Image 1 (cartoon, helix red, strand yellow):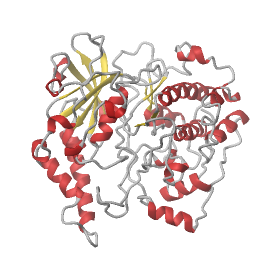
Image 2 (cartoon, rainbow, N blue to C red):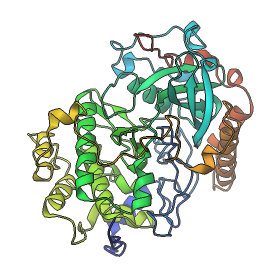
Image 3 (cartoon, rainbow, N blue to C red):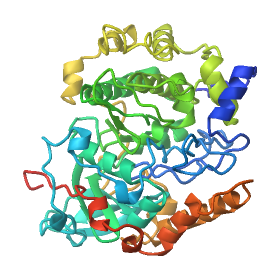
Length: 494
């Protein structure tokens, strides 16, 4: 779509003592990043593979926040390694987890399930679905395109290994994702249809978005015209407005997590990093997100709230228009420094209206950021960039999408917008490969822990490996309670 934008790579390279202290405080790994993690085609961000950088032939890494030296989980005063998938709000031993719906303020919407209902309540089980295609793989989950036997409906099924989740200390995030998805219904948020579990696995059954990830199309096109970006940003604004109205911070807005349905409308997916606040004055304190989209207050650990989503939207908007996030660098520390200090620079072809909106969303002071002032989201919706948008019609999905990602004559089970390396795999319900991938990562961490000057007698990686190689009963006395409340069946019967 037109000429490719110039790289914003060499913008701000200064450093300071304050930044050096920040580098030590954050568990950030300098140098070349690990491969960019691919979000599963299934509407869930299973980032595990590095795409090329928007058709430019160079790699663009989604940088996880990783510790350069071993960090011991649960040790007071020590930070926890954080990746784009592994944001940690607190470290909770599997035996101490108590993630009831009431704890998330969601008890009124979905009744609690007894433990006897968790492992199959006679209404929905794995046997009710036929696997058709593999759509994606990730750290401890994979996603399949499935067909429900009795109705013929198509869904995306995310399958998670319990052992891998527990070994990687992801119980709380997994349960938070399930509870939020089960209590949020919106035209521009992916819908959870069923959730159930077996002794070894968890299953999330979601709407199948055959348009694939927005990143898939951005990579192919390089950048989008502003007329296209206007509709995408407007739909995302409505989705974020809905989440914030329910005290939910999304915290992972990026092209991989924005899916397109068959008609081309956006759907936000992957709520594994989302946070439910007690009220609008509450703040989250953890390092969470993907580096390109981190707000300054997350990097500086000042505590953050809903404003981080508006910052991420400004970053995403700039990326869709220019082809790159505005503070992008292949060096993660430099990228964070730019987010904190660098001047916002955009190519000349960006319109004045788009520049103004991006600048307002990328205001470093969260109290002054567009969307968080006294006018709230109305300051965004009434911005000149959105002139001509009928917000009520948009909410009713009456505004046509910018383009249709799936051919009109394509079959409903088309996977043309997904990575062929996945779709050609034999689709199976097992998660052996995911558990092996977790084991390989834990072995690497254990090797680093052994090199620590004063390693504890029992390190987190070794304990996690023991759990992964053993069985759930040997690791926790109450395996049935760890994921209690995961089951979800719509009240209308689906």
